Image (cartoon, rainbow, N blue to C red; front, side, top):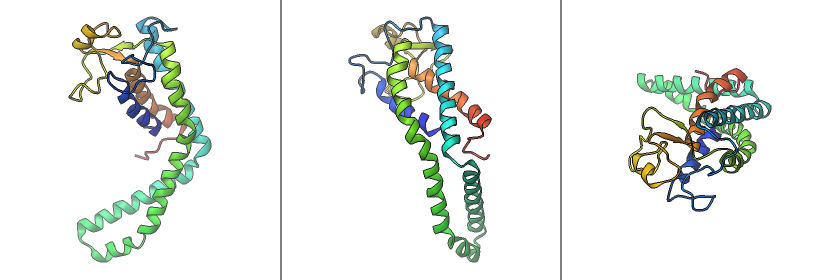
Amino acid sequence: MEIEFILIFLQSIFLQEGGFDLFGDRGALGSDDPFIKGMIASMFGVTAFGIVLNLFNAAVRKKLVDQDKLKRIMKETRAWQKERMAAFRAKDQEKINDLNKKSAYMNKMSMEMMQMNMRPMMITFVPLILIFYFVLPFFFTYTVAISPIPLNVIPGGWFDLTCTAEKVAEEDYCNQENELYLWAWYFLSSIAFSGIIMKFTKTQMDLG
């Protein structure tokens, strides 16, 4: 998963009623008079945005990150961590002491790996947020898909992905129960395609 979408996911927490809202008094991201109308067209439209932005992320990542070096560092650090864990389990103190001598080097490699992964985010984060807050709400309404089941798994009602019966009764932007909010469908569709796109472009962070 790209870290950009994790950050967007966290930003989305503030889009529900009672939270931070860049658009005034509205409690959910979306437009009363969107450019793209209709649930099916909106569903595929938001998915297309997610795919295009994933491709943009992958292109920036491919340009800025030395993938061969990143994979080498990941492989080296994982091998060291695995060997160290095995030594701890076997209570081989001599092996542990020997491996601990490489701790400073491994920490340096981990920091370098983190910096390599953060570099693309510094470029992609701002345009993604601008598109997320100012482009998508202009094109789409508040809800763009319907889930067969409720997706509000976090208790308390402070982080709902789908409309509840209470929201349908209280809010204009929820037409029926289990409708997916614009930002929720964007997040879910982005996550669904991010792994495929990263694998296709060979920019995945996980070696498996």
